[in-house]
Length: 307
Image (cartoon, rainbow, N blue to C red; front, top):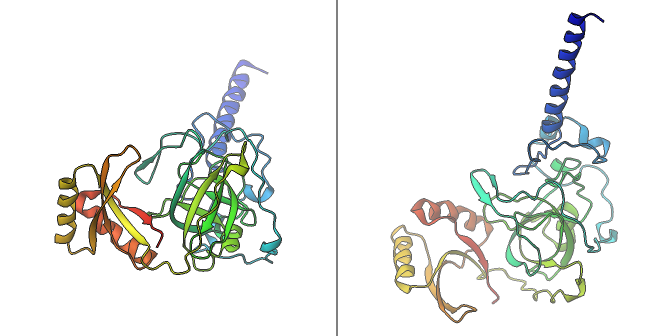
C-alpha cells in the first residue's frame, strides 16, 4: 500500500471509529424523560440488552401517550416480587448531583432509613423495552420503579395508603420528574397495589436494607378515604414571624385555606409549618403548585397526614 493510500485508509478508520462512538453514546442512551445518560467517555458495551432495546428510539413515539399493555397480559397476581439482595451500585444512573429540566437532584449515599409519603404515578407500554437510567431494559411486567434520589439499584416497599396493599419493588430508574410525584411504578407494581387504572395514588415508600430485610417496619394502616389528608407544605420555619409572613403572602394571592402548624422537631426545637389544604385530590395539588411557585416561594412539598 502506498503512503497516500495508507494515510487515506487511516483517516477512514478514524472517521468510522468516531461515528460508531457517537452512535453508541446517543442511540442507546436512556430515552425516558429525565433519564440520566452515561458520563462522557463511557460506552454501552457488554450490557447484554434484549434485541428490542436496540430499535430506533424514535419508534417509541408511535404511542401518543403512555398506557396499558396492548399485548396479552400475564396474571399480575401470580408474578413473584423481587427478593432484596445486596448488589453493587449500577455503573449508570448514580451520578450526583444531576440536573433534569433545570432542576438539580442529589442521589442519596445510602437507601438505609429512607421513608417518604407522596403521590405515586406509573409507566407502561410506551417505555417497555427501552433503557432505564441504569441501562437495564424496562420491563413493565417486573416489579420495578423509578425514583429521583434512591441509589440504583435499591429495594423498597410501596404501600397504597388508601387500601393498604403493598409491593416490593427494585428501583432501577430515575424519575418521575413531574412535580408532586415521589415514585413512578412499573405497570405490574401499579396493578398489584391498585394505582392502575386510577393513574396516581397516595403511597408510602420505605427503603429495604437488603442486609437486614426483616427489619422493615410494618406498613401504615389503610385509610379508605383520602379526603382531608393531602396538603401542600410551602415551608417549615424556626421563627413563627417568617411563617406568618409567608401565610399572609399566600392569603393575599387568594390561595387557601392555609394555616400554620407548630410541631417539635427531633432536636426539641419548635418548627412552624405553612400548609395549604386539605387539598381535594392530586389534580388540585398539581394546579396549585405553579401558582405557589409564581409567588417566589419555590415548589411546595406534598404532605400526607394520618387522619
